[in-house]
Length: 433
Image (cartoon, rainbow, N blue to C red):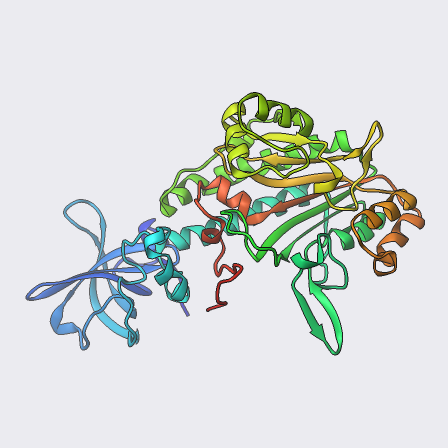
């Protein structure tokens, strides 16, 4: 069993520098007449090694997994170097991949996209992807930390569901023993049930959308951060969500976010710490866009061009509030003074990266919910269990839905959400690997 890692060696946290043990993968090698200089990488870093060729019983190749022992010293530049006394091959390389997985290839370039997609199971070893995986882990850790510190309970929710949030054509339908159901689009239905006992609930899990989209912020399979809070009104909820974004951005920055961004090859964005965020109503957005010569039709969702303009206009994250019923889901409350608008808001990221989350106050009145279901062409009988919640001691409550990949993309200045998930699934793309 591996007892310590390369980072421990580099930080002098090993028991005996004259008996160094290294388990890892060869990521570079340079053979000379008598010796070979090579690098070995593990999950924590890389280290330089040198070995006499007469001690090696096999051809050293990149990507081989090896076990080495030796003496730790410093090279002429003061860098750590292991003088190898024994090297053993663990796993050989018997399939071709060019360029190599750990080579200095731009894994996010469109030029390399097809090769990367077909071989993601191998290229996931690349340092840029390793950085993404670590960043993803850190973001989830930060989000869970905020929920934990604020007394929220993690509620697991089903992936298979009989009801959809959006139109049927956006669902991914599966048949199980002659029952047609869907892969979940919104675990918020189930969190709304749980919030009536636990009051503060959240879930981090997968969601699925079958809608056609070539946007840089859409995937067919993605991860959702969902939450519900009881006894909370719409205007109060802005402060709650801004605190979540500020806290997590700061947490990620303080726990290595900038270093991970460097590893990925980008820069870290800490704009989420600039709270409070400005707010603009949907109606005012339409007026502003048309005043600035950016033609925009009322009742439509914002497109990339509109969001980019607004992002430059505000220069920081901002809210778009009170969106029309026609472009919002059925469970969201109507505004008291204008029944054509909903008590909803979207947080738009800085740097033109678009919407990352939405919030809403949920309908509590059963008659209003029935009306909204009818407007959306949904059958009451299919949503009866969800409606029952409104007739069994319901309370005012608000909810949050944030795309994990969108948040990571914003924090780490990534071009596309497909680059921040280990194995992306996109519409009209073969599911492989």
